[in-house]
Structure formats: structure tokens, C-alpha cells
Length: 129
Image (cartoon, rainbow, N blue to C red; front, top):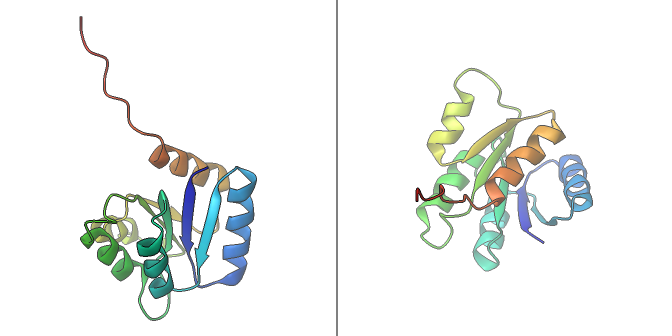
């Protein structure tokens, strides 16, 4: 069962996303701020991180840059989950190191597709014979 770390400062969002992911069979660990999330990621690295970008204190952009700068954690896919949906926000998240981007309010079918795509190992192309 893949472990997903969800870093989000809004409790209702943490509860909603956790319940939906657990129903799909994922183990979910949550953090209410970036510092707590970074500590959890370092202690027991998850297979994927869902990152709120607009948190007080250390924001998601800074937290993602720190994760991607750590050789032990840089391989973990990070999906930005954010209310920042203006032109350029997706590019800003990707340039910070996020592997994908999803806006709030949540479109769960689309989010699940993105999660599954990031957790599925890419198969090498078939060899020509």
C-alpha cells in the first residue's frame, strides 16, 4: 500500500483528502505545515507528496525546493495542490520542483489519475527484435 504524505494547513482539506485516498487503499500521513511535513518526509519517506503551496510560514514552493535539494528525498514525486490558479502559477510550481499541479477545489478523479501516474513505474519501451 503506497504511502502518501499530504502537507496542508487547512484541517478540513486534510480530512477530506485523507478519507478519499484511504478509500482507494493508500496509507496517508498528514502534516499541518511545511516544517512538520519536511520532518515526516525525512523520517519515513513516502512514495508521493501532495503539497499545498499557500501555507503560512514556510510555503509549499520553498518546502518543495528543500525536498528536491535533499539527495535522500529528491526522487519523491511532489504534486502541488493549490488554490493558486492564476496564469503562471502552474509554471511557478513546476519550477520549484513539483512534478505535477492540481488546483482546488479538488477534482478527485483527475487527482487520482495524477497520483496513479506518478506511482506507476514507467516501463521501458519494448525492444525491437
